[in-house]
Amino acid sequence: MIRIAVANQKGGVGKTTTAINLATALAASGWRCVLVDLDPQGNASTGLGLQQAQRVHSSYDLLLGDASLKDAAIPTLIPNLDVVPATVDLSGAEIELVEHENRTGRLKAAFDKSDAHWDICVIDCPPSLGLITVNALVAVDSLLVPLQCEFFALEGLSQLLQTVERIKGGFNPALSILGVALTMYDTRNRLTEQVADDVRSYLGDLVFDTVIPRNVRLSEAPSHGLPALVYDHRCAGSEAYMKLARELIGRLPVRELAA
Image (spheres, rainbow, N blue to C red):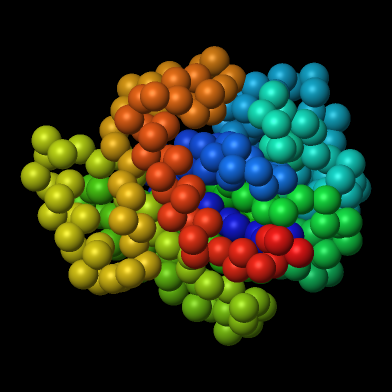
């Protein structure tokens, strides 16, 4: 099972929207996909239509070792897509994990015990670089960074890249950056193009060619408990995420998926 973390310590960059719609696009492409909601706000769970009553087991139980990945995963309305939901309990996990042995590797241990029921796991991380996000980065093969096209984008990205290097040096030497996805791209705003140019000159081929535009339908979809690709598959945002998914698949070790 290929494991991908979607992370950025800045909030409001389209991280959860990216996680939901990429997971949906991957599932629509035929991969068996599980989305793990590690954000205490639980927006990815809500955005996939999960009610609170359905969340018997959660990513909190996964981290604390009280449930397996298979037990915590719940089927969604999307074929091939399951979700491990988040609950409010997760907000206290940062403090509880401090007291546990191997506090940075608990999610990896939970994944390693899974029966490889899925081809791809997408993890929606919280907007911070705390223990929950560190657990995700220790557990995954690669990192996808949604980056909003705004003034402070590169400053926040630099901090995240430093964290990645520390994780590689101390916990997960195999961790790699799958790519950076430019989100909330507004062609009417000159600053957007300037930031995009700066990011591409700084990171080169790490930046995906596909950009995700500002799009009202992307914002509306979660309130209906649906990914944008299901809510309105013809809108510009949905088409962009499908294109991004194709680009992402091209960067994955397909042989491992086929196995």
